[in-house]
Length: 73
Image 1: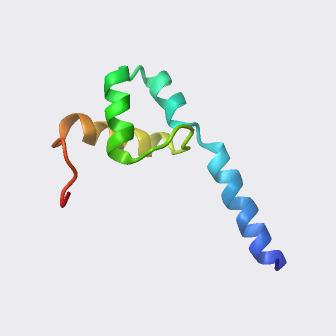
Image 2: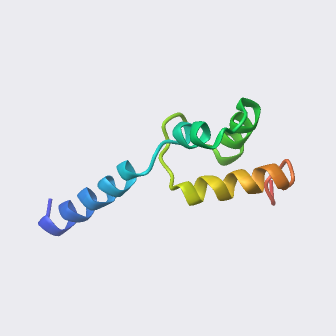
């Protein structure tokens, strides 16, 4: 593998590992289990998915205040 590709891959993996898991976000924010289950289903998040806090909060806000189905579904 070329050195440049290897470095980019390592940086990307390091960034992903820097974000907490969706479970950690839910616990830190006190998200009720029913809301977290619905959010994970709507977003298609598997156990252990890592996202930024901003991504999690935005998805949660949209889930709690938006329609029960995604647009175009």
